[in-house]
View 1 (cartoon, rainbow, N blue to C red):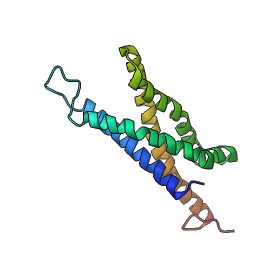
View 2: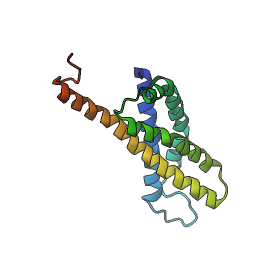
View 3: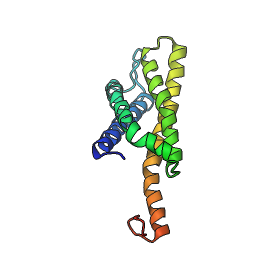
Length: 157
């Protein structure tokens, strides 16, 4: 069971890391700079990158915090609700975090390109799986409520 504080940390860090990452990508690829010597496409691009890197450890901390209280008990329980999106999330954590770190320290263009693509793909899968995981909760609760005749999703026994 996730506590309210854990949920706030997890959702907040996902919003900040995902939001700054998406905004950085848009600023980097959505604008053209007239200066041929500039590597920055938009003036806010470096700030978004710095914020993304600054908030990422917060997300990793939040994920580690809910691992023991939510992830592992759900995996052990065998409950199938939201299992696919949860496993997809779990599978993205290490490659997403490792590629983000390795992207920061890589010096050769070939390695930078590999880590960049790995980070973009795993991060995109993370964001999609996280949203699916959150919304599948509502869909599952509504389906259970319909099956048991309870408007709020509570079981009638």
